[in-house]
Image 1 (cartoon, rainbow, N blue to C red):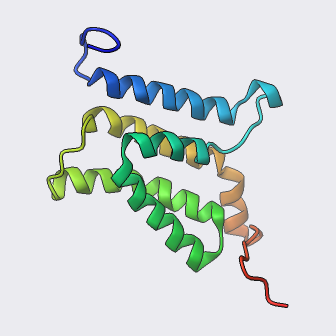
Image 2 (image 1 turned 180 degrees about the vertical axis):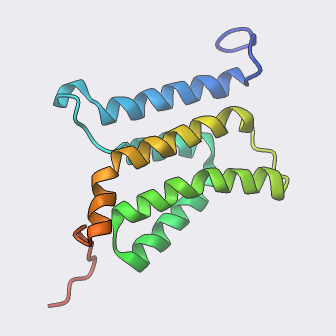
Length: 142
């Protein structure tokens, strides 16, 4: 029973992974090395969630890719992928009947992580609404 005997209704190792992952994301967003002003936590969340819910994250990456390809906004793609993730989990588990290990433990934390992503993107959301958010261009026309 790693890391301790199960005295909760949770799958302990899943809970342990989530706590470590959330700590990494929070540490990236509010890093002491940059005056508690770091990134938005997207890349860090992607890394830890790929190890935890690989298939669901691949679906979210498809959402990200389609959104960025159509809109050319990285921030919108990040937000769309984040918001789609709990929906993907619920649909796979409850509609398609796929047993996602630790689903009951993972889902509340994913919802919290989505809210955190929305919070860290609040300035981007404001710029998207105002139409002043920067677009990416992979192939600039000369």
